[in-house]
Image (cartoon, rainbow, N blue to C red; front, top):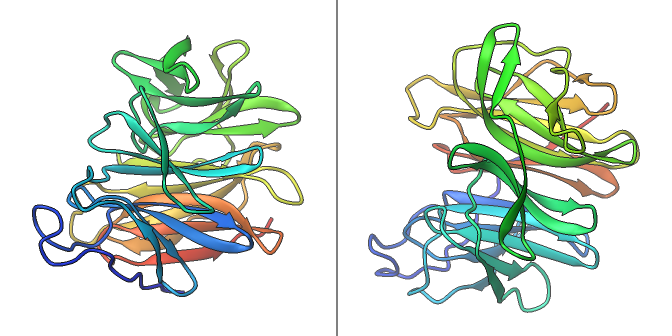
Length: 288
């Protein structure tokens, strides 16, 4: 399924005029998928995925969007955006859809945003360590090792996602060679890599986590940030409770992806991916 999004930007908006969004996130609001994001040259906008219609967009003179993410809080659905990994802007995903605040923390697509012990947090690599940042104070309160040791050797971790597995908070990390591994935040220690990892040439991997009527699921997508000719991103689903892959990788987008989000639609888990080169948004049904 391919969705086309209307452009809210007029000729002259941004330094290079209208351009395809390069950073997107997705949420389900009142039973409908809402997309939020923009590009380095265009400010934030929101769309209704079914129709492609623009719901709301920022002032053309606002900062562009280098990274976009989504955060579900009790009773609220939010988008998070950042220009060049700078301060985080917070946007309402329902109601007016307007900006409702800013956070003094760095943010990029490798980081995980979510709730941990009843507080909103960001998790990711910062400076020389992996850190857990409290969004309520904009400061880190926990650190853990940067090295992920696998059978293939030490691996660079590229992406994080937060999950609740059997009632305990877990951080899910994806490595550049294809490993997916949980982190025990109570002990600040890596767990065992999931069964079904298939090591491959070094690439960038993004991970999203969600849960429906059953065990929580993680979805990973590979990406080539340099968009080498002939590269096709692959997507894979993982059972977080049993610690193994649910299926073999499937081809997702030619030329790589710029984002992956896992959410629920009509009571079942779906993954939403955004292509880097084909400029399409695709919705994937996930089965256990």
